Length: 522
View (cartoon, helix red, strand yellow):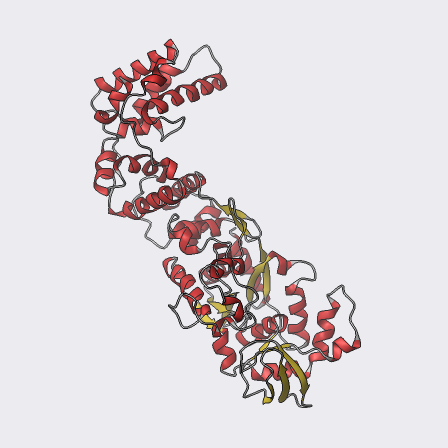
């Protein structure tokens, strides 16, 4: 059973007669939203799909936590705006866009992510929390939280290890109050009326001192561990995933569940903690530091359905990495193989479900040229689609319009991340290298040259079989012959490219124009 189906069954068992189930997720637009954050929304998305598959009405709710404060300046923003630090303490939605493209810093980051969601064919019911707070929608809940602030304090402190004092308790208020003069949260609450309808505060940044009506003053936000459970009730949330830190013992979910039940009278939703993703060489991703790879970046290399496939195949608590090395070729190969099994109906139950959730094209879609094949052939002809088509035709591999997006991704991958794979033939024969070869190696070069020169149409498998026939020694073990293959391939690569490694040799020799390379093997 797929993990999303299992979670859907748990949700239904908990509330079997609910008319519509709500699966929620939320992200703070503290910077460019990284691909790791996509797990937040993907997990809920697949559970919604699982509920719908079971005949239930379900909705994907996505919240932008854009009324949170800017805590620090991301490194990529500091590079383009030296004085961005002056906005620390302001809500993301009220900070100007340093790029000058959107109405706010929050909107710039939100639009970037939402464009990727459109490409990934995920269309949630979106809430912009600045709009919700500024509309006064949560005023009653803010007043309730102020009235029960001491109870909230007792719940929060119950899960902390540090000592607390009666003074701390009496001075605790479960809100962030932004100053309407400077828009910062550097405010100090002086007093709150007995009915919690009025607040007097002083801003430590601009010095403003005011008394305001809570219902009219909309620059008030509940602190996160009160805000989260409040919204569970406001939206009727049945399921919401969160990072592994929230799932820890005495972590945020446990604390917020206590607040939900005992302050707001709300039954907390089913919760699943998910593991972080990483990018090879960068470690964990964080939007607030600028150390991230966005979905937009990933989609320039991975096809949309493949991105969905990776998130669908791994259980939420299982970590995985996005690598921009040869791992991509393996990912494409696994995806293509699984897709063909899915279309044929021969995949196992789990993988059939994975492809049900990740694909949004008809099963009749023809198979595409393997990513690895394009990566070997396309650089030879400068990634020109027509020349790629003609070159692949030499090895009986059809190339159509449906392969163009994959070709573009191959070109981007090689150009940006693997420029060393844009192999170029030597202009002249590598005579100096050839002279220092052994007699056996020279004989192998001559044999390969003659075979290629004498045969007009050669398939990839023919070249592969011939190469192994002149390299392998029947008297040696498989391991010993593999070592011989590596040594001889190194010879051929040096004669062709002046390098110890190169494209898949038998594919290259079968697909490339022999007139370009035979002189180098002569």
